[in-house]
Length: 257
Image (cartoon, rainbow, N blue to C red):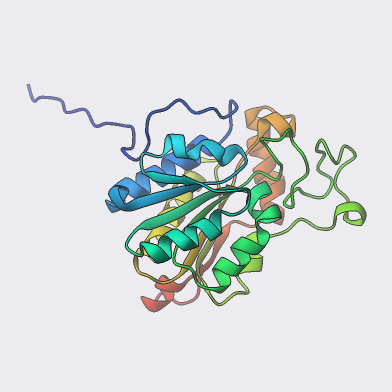
């Protein structure tokens, strides 16, 4: 009888530390996808992860790479410094919508405008998760949060911000994609975009960002299946899932994204 060889199902780029996320949260899914891509590209030993403030604050405990903790919203600034000093490193920030799209908005916009050669993994769950469910810049109209108990309105808070569409106006962005962590097919697509973002960085093509629509059952007041349906039926209508820009693809003769 042939000897059975068991394959380690756990990515080498994850530490194995038990994650602190709420039950049903898809931060863990995002972590695994990033770790699998790091393993597959063989860049673990030169990767630097940058954790910011929010539910992502403990990311440095979960990625088995070098890591830095940035101040709230300042992940892109820290990434810029590290990548410029160590250009052969593979640098990525892991940021939520409350961090990136609120206090960190200027950081991400100017990093993209400067074509900084690092990658951002952007988790959009349309709410401030770590600090008790307040309205975020990405909170949908009508969505109830602890600071918009009657639902977000244009008159009081303006329109939700679409980050990928905003960054798509900047010449320095080389890869931009929005994906959803809801179904197996969408998760596989998300991994492809994450890999492409890292490949873009490795090619020296410039700034790359992957936005991941993620569920937050805790602060949405839903169970996991309801939260997945909410992404599919509501969030994707406002935040369409697609590749916005793939400069490597254009250079390879793939045409516009």
